[in-house]
Length: 244
Image (tube, rainbow, N blue to C red; front, side, top):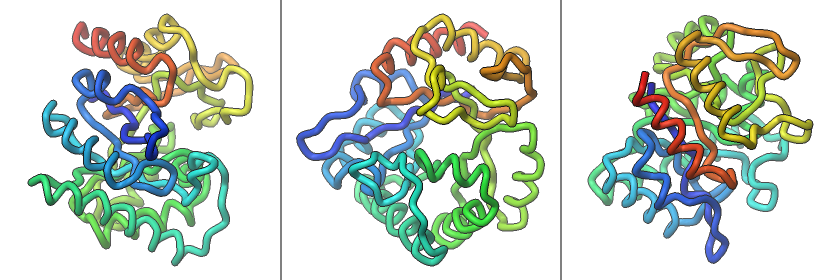
């Protein structure tokens, strides 16, 4: 099981996350590409940190929403959305190439990520962007009971799919993430986070906010870098992964 974290989400003099401390604990760094967060210098520094720790680098593109941190739903024409995705992937990949590496996977951010899981048209545009710019990069999507349908769609576009589960987010009965505006959407204590990680790994399932148990199979587990408990969570999850 690989541990991934959203990284490089600072912007100018504004700092988000504890990237330097968390980086040695993870396997995959999903680096913001400048639309929902980050800037060229932050992107470069994060790439350098990932390389120093031998961490796999992924692109974390989002909606063009710096003010809302990519967590507001925007209505974009499919051509505009695709162009924006390619723009972001190219920006991060350019920095990676300067440092002798490449973007190795793509994981959409925030509302764009959640929307692709509920809206087939959005998923289609994202798959087209990955296929056209980075066909060798797997697309990271939410592990749900409908994962086989998503895998089939990925095969249509000749791209690999990696399925992701979340350590610190609550699930609804459809297997999607509970909206952050709802109470209990984000887990705040290490015990709850640890229990969810162990259930995902040992039982291939999660328990929803209502108490329903649903099956999922994940390739990677996410810890949010912008969480106030990101460092403690990453350490705790790394200990769990190492012990199993």
